[in-house]
Length: 514
Image (cartoon, rainbow, N blue to C red; front, side, top):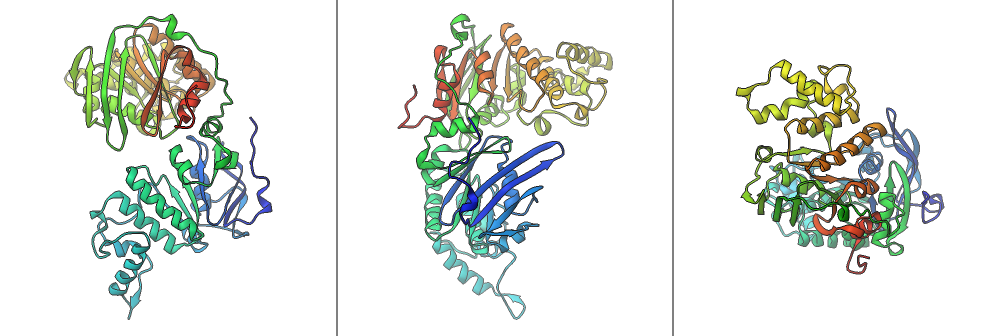
């Protein structure tokens, strides 16, 4: 599948906002590689891509937070140099981020007019500000008191206020970064009504989201990025959900090729049972039984609820409905310490922020979970620590000049092997691995996959989240598919193949699973 732009060369059309040949480099990493993007007045344009695709970098260039290393940005057909977000605003470009950047302890009116309050005789004219606020809010269907504190209202109302502020300040282009992530269905529909109205008023809207159903509900066109490159810009009318998923994942997949893993491997005894287990605004209740000696692969697009499911399994976020049983006994996993006590381990996706203790040594990073389990009154001495760390350093082929060197100096692949060693040192019964092979070198990648297969053969139960479909197919006994924060399929036997996974991710009422 080649890289393409489905609508011809963009220079042939004048856009409200355009990026031409954008290049952005961070050190040795090319974040954007000659990307084109054109936004028409009076359209909602979805910008899609998995982690590392380049969406955030492109948005930051369009809003002046970053400057490109190559290419140019044009507003209304004229090249512009955006040194900061204020300059972007002066060209009519407004942005609303997922985490609303307003002041909840100030009034609605103060937030609407933040930085540009009307004045009279050198003082803020509050009466005028509140009067104009009422007029603005009415346009967005909000009948609320502009003098009341913004924080007293729901996230949805705060989101609408943020949009109103961005539109009133800028007025041509509105960039929405994950605006629906914290909204329920009714709130999403209310937001979409506002977007339809803005579109009718001639505003150009960029809509960044992970929810495919929402893309097809509100967007006119879609641009898909992958690994810093433009993959496709196309009208939504010309694409199915399956087309979009394939383009995002880079899989031109066939609907064949079962692994036979399930048929060849008998089920072990039940270790865990999650029944109607979920967390409001995070992941819909799911049912999942996990056996000893099996790998359950978890597939789905970024934002589908994969990580959220892993986090409530481990107690990093507590479930607010459902039950969990360990070895047939009902229990509560309200926090990670509960999970660790039951023999759980969790390797998070973001290893730098959530996985490693950067300033601690390799040795300390390996033994820290075991030490926590033993309790600090049974502290491991240095010789014991070195013996444990040395054992895993050798078995996992951790390449470090010394076990006493800070882990932050190791490569990503070696850091990942240290995190995995940390949990293996606790002799776990159950491991959750979230994107364990992302961003690591080929050698480390192969070692991690070999370790997953070995642990399964030794009788461990594993849940492995991965965007690498060929990889997850190769080692999984079963695969569950997440979409829009809901478990929508459980695949066994012949259905464990990339084609069926892609179709399950994309599946909609008009696209039945093959």
